[in-house]
Length: 255
Ligand code: NDP
Image (cartoon, rainbow, N blue to C red; front, side, top):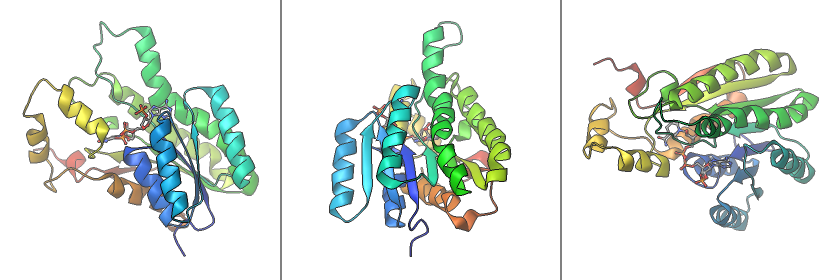
């Protein structure tokens, strides 16, 4: 028996990176998985690979900032599996804006993906959880919700908002047996972190980042996925409203 046997898990941004690792781990733990992503080719390839190995997996190309498209896609998941037990709000993006030159449209794009999408996905999946008297939502926030670095304005604001949303929603839905937690990764080796290193003006930024990690390395997507699947499972039955760091100790470092 896996930790998520017979559970239906919905993951956003599941085609690559941390989301992909969550999809793979949830399937290995016995779940039926649905995932949404903008990346259609990678999504189809992952679905084919997992179903060929006996996994129950559905994929839809959905922009999770589009409430109408999301409503239809969640309805399709409910038609396929009958319910959603676990929602993982993982889709997100980095931002490297400037407080003066950033436009309102750019601001909205960031907050739509990094914050509003979590509200929308919960809005459409919570009715199924409430009807069944339980469920679990895991929001992928970031170490940036606590500490941030120059050049990533206003990523910290969106991710802090997501941790606040986690607390607010956790209190609101606890009476229905639904738990809501955040996971805050530090540096995790994905395309997103590679993009961060590549756009940074300091060519030595990657070596410097490694140097300050208490564990002496950057994390893997699989290490985040393990914590997410733990929080999603009954093993975490008394955990709600929490923000779990998966950062190799970086977030407790002062000097
Ligand atoms: P990746 O960019 O590697 O993967 C994110 C996936 O989400 C991509 O496939 C992306 O598609 C998809 N996506 C983005 N926007 C949307 C959207 N509107 N609708 C549907 N899918 C979308 O990122 P990571 O795996 O690194 O990050 C996953 C989460 O973890 C994010 O929320 C990120 O902020 C958070 N995080 C990551 C850290 C890291 O070090 N990697 C550290 C802390 C937090 P596309 O490529 O087409 O944009």
